[in-house]
Image (tube, rainbow, N blue to C red; front, side):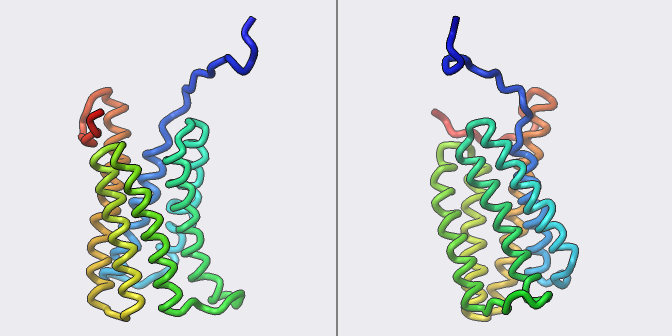
Amino acid sequence: MESPSNLKVLDTTANPAPLGLLGFGLTTVLLNLHNAGFFALDSMILAMGIFYGGIAQIIAGVMEWRKNNTFGTTAFTSYGLFWLSLAGLLILPKVGLADAANATAMGYYLFIWGLFTAVMFIATLKLNGVLQFVFASLAILFFLLAIGDWTGSALIKTIAGWEGVICGASAIYCGLAQVLNEVYDRTVLPLWPVKA
């Protein structure tokens, strides 16, 4: 009789990546439409950041942990907590629990997330072309937003907004491609996998 340590468990759980990618992508598009000047920062973006960008990505990250996917766990949990921390940065001063972060501090906050994303991009070189684009464009977005805060340049922030819409749209594409490809059991939307 086999010992429990030698038993393999068949994983029949669903792929959590589309949930995480869509939580990230839809929220990123909406925030960056604001950055591009389409509308003010309001409860719509905060709610998306807390619930879909934040909590849904954390759930996806925990589900990726169950699938033994270190990259997915790290990415989705980290970016979910990014959205919650961003909401906290905006909400805490409004309710009198902390002083608002100044532009220099926000620049460093965004810059450190850009560094994290740049390193995560290196991991995508072993995954697929769409994820490579998502992470490369996200690193650029964080760096542009940091520069925008440091310089106070409205032009850089607007450029960052448009670049962020493209980044978010690529994550939406990646998430929906995985859903459609699985449902139809064929490549409906290509992800350009890396050749081994």
